[in-house]
Length: 277
Image (tube, rainbow, N blue to C red; front, side, top):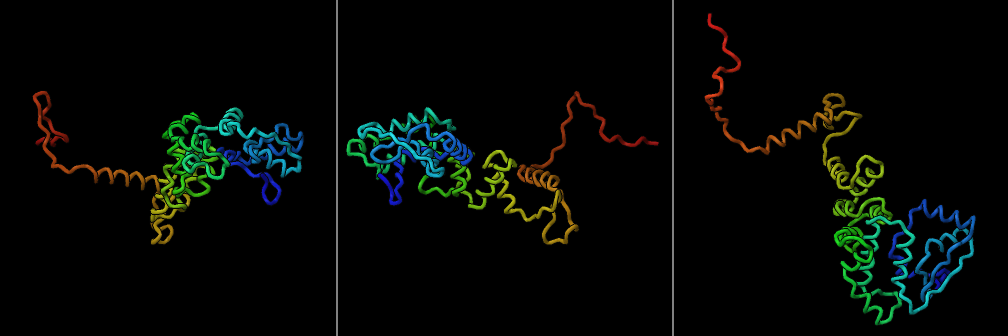
């Protein structure tokens, strides 16, 4: 089955797995340009189910692609699982994303896949736990992936792409999807630059920057309503004082009681009284 421009269309089974990162695709293009297509692209019922990156690389390099047709009654879903599991070095997060996509396709009845009634009945009964087991990940990790790639997700496209390519863990990304878009983008930039190890921590820092009335000027912080240089507070000292004051405010207030002396304690007070003349 080809599109209007003469290209082969992609089966929804081929879209279960994430796209390879741009550097890997560039390396694939160079390999095909120099040595040609070494592995055939697999078709099933006229659509590509395996080899979409090789097919796109052939189109961009001008190399003639060659195909192999999978029998129409073959278990195409299991074929895609076996081929990708054998060749791809995927992280747990990427497998969780693929498991969530598989579960969503099953919930929709695999619309547009060209399955007959019996095939749809088998695949439609796939549960979330079964999808997680197919991709060897935990159900909880698939739920995290659903918070990012679900229909009602508020994740920005950049965050989805980073999770899809394994740049960030879905368990970490799912903790910031409810934040405003600008906070998500700022947190992602902080993780990519190495200034924060996790998106959750980066989002907290981004929110503090958003609501902080102080303006950074180098290593110091100046109050915006004051002329520059009039009031300068180092953030380290300000943070230490703020943390102490919050902790002190949260302590329960209680009257100070005089310390009771035991028989083993010295009765001498401190500081000592001056000697009498």
